[in-house]
Image (cartoon, rainbow, N blue to C red; front, top):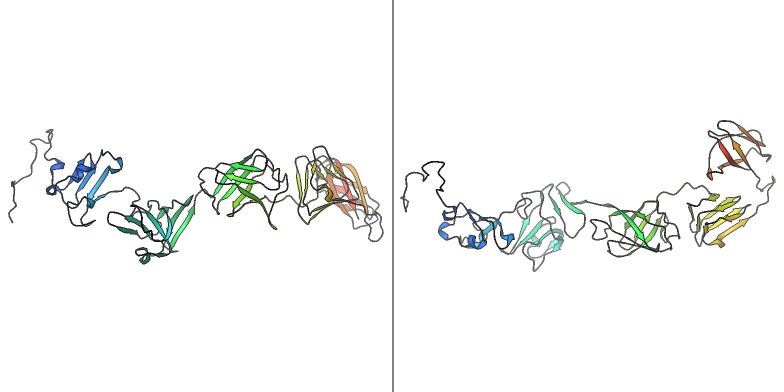
Length: 429
């Protein structure tokens, strides 16, 4: 078949490869790659210069969002080559609809009921049992995007390892696990350190980056600026709303004891949808303290007794629950300067007759000095081989544990690995 037009039998070329002339103007060629400043210039390309599959770049449009590279795709909307709706813009990186990449554009939310009036570009991840005229034929896990030009939902079928961010869920990326057959949440910033400040010891506030809602599976590591001045207190992070703090223990949720919060301790807090649940670090060894030092707080929970044999001194804080009790046996109860005691009426002084008869308690105590690794023989005259020995360092008000051996029914031998200038030894039998 003979071509029509001006026929040439060889290529059009300049006289010399270095001649500063062009052999063809792209905007005058049929098909190929055209380049224009404005989107309206692209739309004005005449039919005679259009060809399916051609490329056109827009580089300086009045709307910067229109700048980019487009391809004229056959059948995108219809087969009319002059229909400018058939121009499709190239999208770099994790493109929305092709499903050829493994990092997808963000989605609005996980949804199961088809939206009736979506906006162009709206994207959703289908949840359980999708329903609707178009979504009802799809499956859980598909990603759909509304194409207003074509009036259809464009579907991306997930591949193993694909990742997508869900805009209405903080700190979460979904990754598709082909083996499990569903999208798996991969948390970011699941543990957040914060500092809680207050002006009254009751209402605490804090700020934290990357936190826009209270999530149920986020753990907050909190340091309080001061102790609490009430049994009830609240925490408000980033102005998201003040939530009541509850003390979490093996007995469940409860209020705090005044002065229970220690500003030198890091606490774990988790939101349960209603309260912030505070979990205290593991408690101190369950040893009875005869002297509560100025920097210490001892808490006696509800329906528990704190038993002390001998004198008790409170220089710090002794917080007794309304239903708790402190019992001092054969001693005195002394509150030092700066010491505080809640529910003082729950302290009971009890005297038990001493002696060696049946059912009676015998006690011997003495203050001595111990030299490192030097045995000390203590005579207690309780006339019993079944005695208990407790040793206290008077300087630190802490118990210590020397080597103890019974030397007959009326004495014991004490050997300490370190020197103690003043030690109180209590022998009970």
